[in-house]
Amino acid sequence: MRPNSQNANIHTAICGKNPRLYPVGGFVQIKAFSKINLILEVLERRPDGYHNLRSVMQSLALHDTLTIKPHTPAKGTPPLRLTCDNPSLPTDEGNLVFRAAQYMAEAYAISQPLSIHIEKRIPVAAGLGGGSSDCAAALVGINRCFGLGLDRDALREAGLRFGADVPFCITGGTMLAQGTGEILTELPPHPDCWIVLACLPIPVSTGEIFRQVDAKAQPDDGPESTPAPGVGPMGEALKKGDIPGIAKEFFNALAPVTTRMHPEIDGLIAQLRELGALGAAMSGSGPSVFGYFENKAAASAAEHILKKTIKSVFLTRPERMRLP
Ligand code: ATP
Image (cartoon, rainbow, N blue to C red):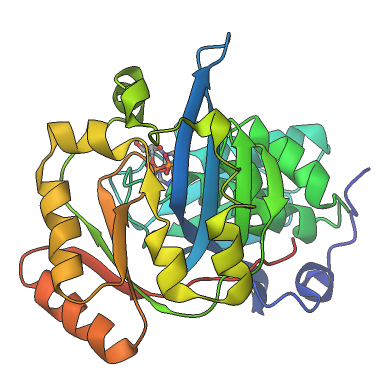
């Protein structure tokens, strides 16, 4: 597939009817949604050193925004220019968006210069999948921009080279992720509810957490003897739209490891419960923690109280799957 060189009317080509993409005078913007792990089971270590996982992943409305702008080729214009409103993030090969754009330009012989801006709202290195989601948004956005016609599976395959969570982020929604995260099964869409997300300002290294992962962190009867979470009680609760039932099933095998190093995460989970959360858990390898609330008033009150001591607190909701 070759990019369409006639990009004069790019907005119609780019945006179609996809609510995730919208035109803004000569460029497109795309939302990159955060994610949480409702269930995260760590299975055996693979020969490549990674662990097989089984996770129920859920997109949240909290998002970054990517603005992608193709330019007319001109002397001196760099082929790719990345900017970000968070100065702590790299804007070169160190950024997954840069690498995704570079890959697409090379793989599909895109000669038109591109500029991409990231408006960063998802806390960085927080277990919320921000980098993976930005990367997926760059792949989806460039695919649309240049009319490459890559479907969901082709975009997921391209995304896997940049990280295990990228394939999920191509569509987001509610999914069972297996393997290192690349084997995806769609689950019933999550019912609407209010979620308070809080991110403590502590550094957590995902690599270090996985190095320390302890087999005892698994459920008592071991993951192999339990049903995959998508078809067990979590799948049932999702199907019924049972929010307390979903909250009852939260599980994160990495939580004992992360909280051993940072006990304040356990304190935050307990605080969310005291503030009325139906359930609360850590996302990914941490340090972010989320609590589920059935009504907005209770969630807002909890958000307000947590904000007195924690800078990064968000009131958000589940986000449904969006086709690329
Ligand atoms: P996950 O939940 O997938 O493990 P995370 O939420 O813990 O991810 P990220 O926010 O994706 O972590 O950041 C992890 C690292 O990736 C950071 O140290 C950062 O330097 C790097 N990175 C590269 N590109 C990006 C990006 N666009 N946004 C955020 N981080 C990025």
